[in-house]
Length: 423
Image 1 (cartoon, rainbow, N blue to C red):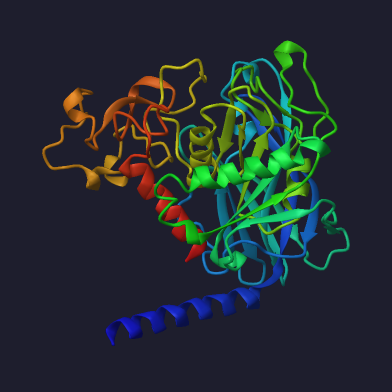
Image 2 (cartoon, rainbow, N blue to C red):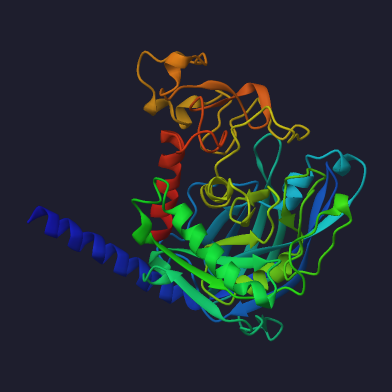
């Protein structure tokens, strides 16, 4: 009887929250495109355009982002009451570029997007940037008239969409849209096979295997003119639908796309929470940015682990736990504050991280030894630096690909995000 009362109460709360959503928002999306420019020390934002999509794919109950992950954060305010009605954290290529040597020598611009439910009444949106000291600085603000004739419709669907898995309503699911890059029309059959391999790979790992019913996956069948993707160091520049390329920020295996507009236009054909791009090449590489997109290559023997590693970045906000590779950034983390990523700590405020998962006799920091391989601890090295940053386990899929699973801390972070989108 108690369980029935609890279930009924939860259902009532959910229905009440959805009714509140419908009173504040239309069941469609408002897409704000903007240009993000600057140097290592300065940044500014300029509006590109506002677009209206015909559906909303996100949660109708989790409207306020309490996690506040990401380098950036935005809030949508109702103008009449000045109350926050929607917020989300996210990352961007610009934020990563600011930590490179190039950013200290030149200025650059990037195209970016934030997505929100379409407000019924006058609203304002405010974008914040997380400073090196960990404080939120106001970056940009804009008043929104939802009836403005300058809000244009998003591009009409152009390419076929394939339903891959899942049958939950978009507001009750983690909706993944998979986009192809470097597949010609004749190779779309291969893309379909690669999509199936992505699905099988994702749900072969915990905690995704146990939470598979919370996911919906769709794929957009968009061909490229040429096969493969760009490799600048080899002067190889095929014409592809999303213009992905290796050597992003001059790091050979970092494979991303600067063409945000094409990515969003293609993804916008379906309801989505997460974007994942499959690049048609055997060359090893990929990348993932929180609440932006993940990308990986498909012809490598490590592709399955690359999928889940990069999705860990883009979906759950997990940080890289390695520190001894060719990937290098200039002061990517401030070691005097806690990083926002849930699987990294500087021990400045370890109580806010995974301290509760440690056994009472586990030393902090924890010495990396064979006897500690299965222990959740505090192991030095992570976030691209060997000293001052700590990770939860000696090894994990966010550290190397030698492991076959995520550590307990990463699993917990992934489950928290699945529940955020689907419950």
